[in-house]
Amino acid sequence: VQLQASGGGLVQPGGSLRLSCAVSGIILDYYVITWVRQAPGKEREGVSCISRTDGSTLYKDSMKGRFTISRDNAKNTVYLQMNSLKPEDTAVYYCAVEIGVSTCDFGYEYDYWGQGTLVTVSS
Picture 1: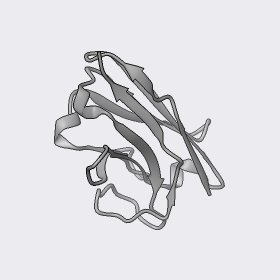
Picture 2 (picture 1 turned 120 degrees about the horizontal axis):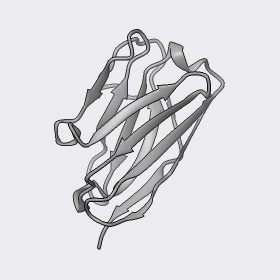
Picture 3 (picture 1 turned 180 degrees about the vertical axis):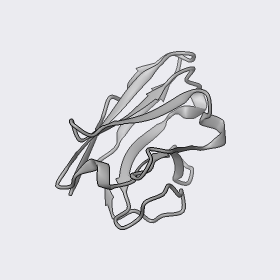
């Protein structure tokens, strides 16, 4: 199983970015995919998740209304659209998968991780 995150970069406060997580080795629509981030000097935190059963989603409270997670099963890719970005959103963003679960939960340890993509929000 391989996950490859991309789409990070430098953006001004209030700007937008779309992250992509290309997944190989598994059939995407059978798995729960989570975006996790880690800011410098801070603990890792769950950002958003999309389940495998009904496509339901989960967001950390501070991302609700700003971030949107989606999946394209034909392309085996999960996206994270990030709008109204703030300096505190600066972090390395990872996509991850927990094998054997069907619903979202930020408490998983995750079996596979992508390599991470850096998002920097700064003027």
